[in-house]
Image (cartoon, rainbow, N blue to C red):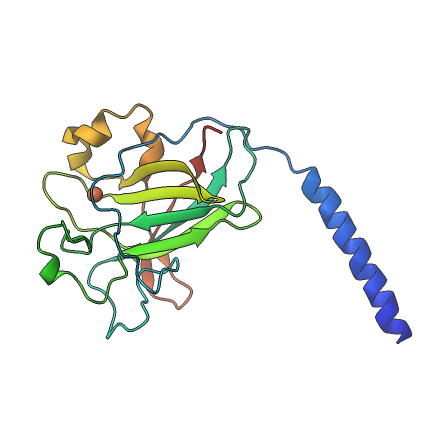
Length: 211
Ligand SMILES: [Fe+2]
């Protein structure tokens, strides 16, 4: 009993110390703001029952979706360079054949039944988020892209799209090329080893809000 009380006090002191250190966290230097882009016509009408941040493993699927597995993540910052916790980052994209899960999209009958198409990642206390998905297929004439919407307390903070380095279609894409500061929308992927030892493409993309 005595030991438990002593341990409890040490824990309480540690919590106070961590809270104090947390309050003193220095803001990151803000060198860019993540530009907004059009939402496009394919924001999901019906969101999947499984809407977590892993779009590769889906409840009820008979296997893995086709395509190269991509993991990406980063930190969500506010305009002052402080991490934003508790924001919901939503993504939606095509499967490996460039098909969306949307009633107005083309070729939806052929869409990959094992792909989740939509996911959400809630930013942690330190502002970090992470997704596991597949490299989206191309649908002409657009470059490969992932749609992003960021919400907090039900309010939309940013709607945009993410792109990939080494995709030449970006240069001629009217949506990408006309966006000032579009370098902040590019995810640079590199070969990486996943937790289970399998190869994966990984990219980091910090997102900085204008608020
Ligand atoms: Fe799109």
